[in-house]
Amino acid sequence: MKKVVKFGGSSLASAEQVKKVGDIVRADESRIYVVPSAPGKRFAKDTKVTDLLYQCYDAAVAGGEEFQTILTEIKSRYQEIITGLKIKLSLEEEFAVIEKKFMERAGSDYAASRGEYLNGIVVAKYLGYEFIDAASVIFFDEDGNFDADKTDKILSRKLKSTERAVIPGFYGSLPNGQIKTFSRGGSDVTGSIVAKAGKVDIYENWTDVSGFLTADPRIVDNPDPISIITYKELRELSYMGASVLHEDAIFPVRQANIPINIKNTNAPQDPGSLIVSETSRRPKHVITGIAGKKGFTSVNIEKDMMNSEVGFGRKVLQAFEDCGVNFEHMPSGIDTMTVFVHQDEFEPQEQKVLAAINRTAKPDAIDIEVDLALIAVVGRGMKSSHGTAAKIFKALAQEHINIKMIDQGSSELNIIIGVKNEDFETAIRSIYKIFVEEE
Ligand code: ASP
Image (cartoon, rainbow, N blue to C red):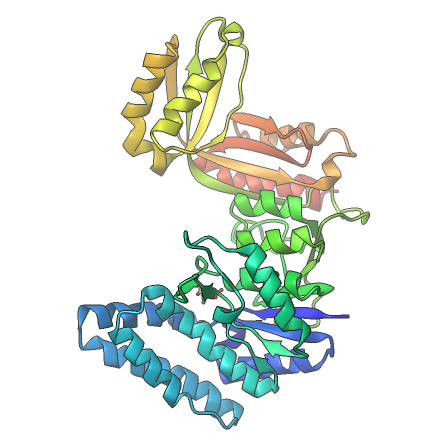
């Protein structure tokens, strides 16, 4: 049995937290590859080391005096951890190199990556594991896209010859050797890449929550935890705003059929959530989770005999595409077609899009409605049960909520509902109640 364990910033924010990490790693022999983030927030108003590094680099570029102040703060964050762990380690030389590189304008990606790099050195020393610089095993191509083939080849070879290693998250290198990072929260992605290359049995992702919840705890009191969820379900939920894991972290492990276990560093006994490709385990409820987002606009386009006009839909969508506006959903009727877009993306382009639709598709009428919310009700259990949509209608009718749109994907994995922004929270609570509390 082999495991990759990735620890998020809050799990490594202080010496006390790193000690918990040490206990977790030592408690299980199979935890052989460790992927750390940079030290995160120790308390609500604290600043993450990654953010300090961005600020520090900006100050270096601007030539401001602040540079030294921020650098000193970063040094003391690491020193506090090293002292608290009672390990013999000096980062003095590393910091001298970093300072020099900042002066040479090594780039903000280089700057940000040092958070994980230094933390990797600290964690490796504390655990007695080998340190592997991610720049030597994680690669991007000339265009800055992750180079999966090259990485997999070199990283798997390296891991084969390494018994236990710490590989810092978040960054890799470009063909010219320059450092490049993933987008924010990208250590999750590194964990997934290491899991695939290391051919491990499970990817444990340690954070500060005990996995996914059926609904947003800011909306629903004490929502049920999700013990097992498929990658597909998770995609639907995270796309709609449920975020614990970086979106791109799913792909490498999904290809390799490696499950991810989301665990809580502060409550390691909790089982957390298991993300799998397929499962025969029946979900506890018909639905696995509910998520949603506010701030959509619907553009409703009407034209008599639209259904028999070849190319009508293409012309409408072309208008959005030409103006760089992404569409979210597109429910349609016989003579109507509605396009849901993000309000903030659409607003600046509005008149351009409308003019283009009028010019090319020549509709009878266009009607716009703003301040809408979309809610995704997701669950593999919906496939084998009937009456799910009816139940949603009932839940919303009981609360006198007007449904603006309902759209079921053909996979029967999710139902998307459009309501007014102001009904968003009540709608989620009522759907949660009918499916989870009353089942
Ligand atoms: N430290 C990076 C960030 O704050 C990456 C990560 O934590 O995953 O975004």
